[in-house]
Image (cartoon, rainbow, N blue to C red):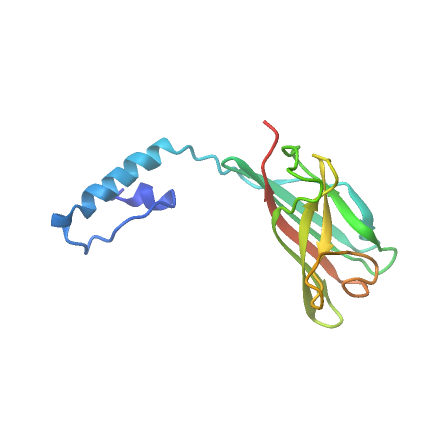
Length: 180
């Protein structure tokens, strides 16, 4: 392994070998390697889980795919729900259970760092959204939508941010701090 490779793998700043060594770049890369050795590699593998969904049922032919992993002091979660051909339901403000209990939210409506998308298959159009905490729950999050007009979070319902139909997708990826 070359000097600086461990630092780069840990996401630390490195300098190319073309840099003038008389300016100390090689020493900086070596120090980066030394620091990287102290950072525990705690990014774990993805683990599938079955979230409990409320106000959201994929129906016949639908699917729920969910996974989580530990990333240093955070938990990263991915959830994708594809609505089936029949029997799906989207109620007001769908919620999903968490794989690992979260630290008590700072406020009842705290937003989590997320990328949430609602995909309308028939219109080939995506709508943005967000994940927020449910009151003071440390085990459940709720899915919200961002309408183009107001810019304020709104409840996801069977007809908002669009009228959900077979094949539509609700997907999210978010991080949160777990309870110690």
